[in-house]
Every structure is written in C-alpha cells, then in structure tokens.
Figure 1: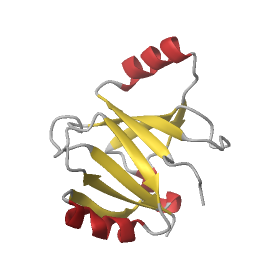
Figure 2: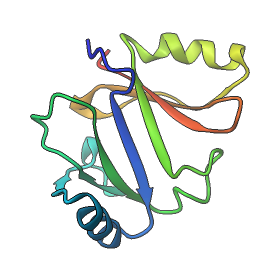
Figure 3: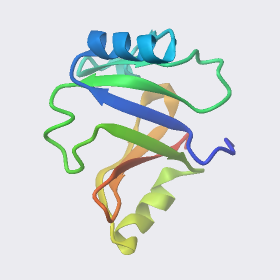
Figure 4: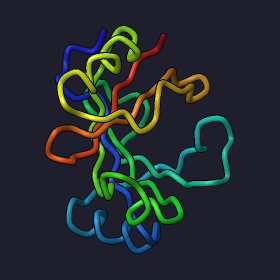
Length: 129
C-alpha cells in the first residue's frame, strides 16, 4: 500500500496544449499522454511523470465543462489512497461532506470515489479493490 498521504493529483484544464506548455515552461517537465481509463473519449489526460515514478504523480485532465458544471468547481483534485475506497466513502456524509460520484471502476487502474468536504473542496478516494 502506498504510504504517501496523497497518491495522485489532477489539474483540470480547458486547453490541454496551453496547459502542457505552461507547466513545461514553469517546471521544466515533460508530459506523457495517457489513454483515459476504460478507453473513454470524454476526456484526455497527460501525466507529469512516467508510470515508473514511485512517488506521488499526477496529470493534466481536459474534460468538457469539468471546471464549471460540477458541485465543487473542480480545478485541482487530490486523491487519497485507501484499501477499498467504498469504506472511506461511507464516512463522508456522516462527517458533513457529500459524495457526488460513488465508487466507480477506472479500468485496470482500480476504483475511485469523488467527494466534497465541508468547505466545498473536491477530493478523491482511490483503491485497487
């Protein structure tokens, strides 16, 4: 199990090429385009680092209206690692938050849940089971 507090992050963008150019210029990083989980064509992803990276990694994500038509106005998404994200998801509403995307499969990459905290911040839960 990943021992980092954060296991993945996503920065939602309106224009992938523009965002990649910005972060490449500012951070000096190279991007690696990634097939969306499940082969979806609803969004595109480009990773900050190779899959071989053993630390915390993340991606730029371009998804139509992701930043304007969702409960938390997602711009950055942090995922917390779990054994089974449905367990932590079951605690969200009891703690005053809201689940807006229950546990769903992301293909060979495992499962995620998307939630809002008490301050209307969007965060994700991630597990392989």
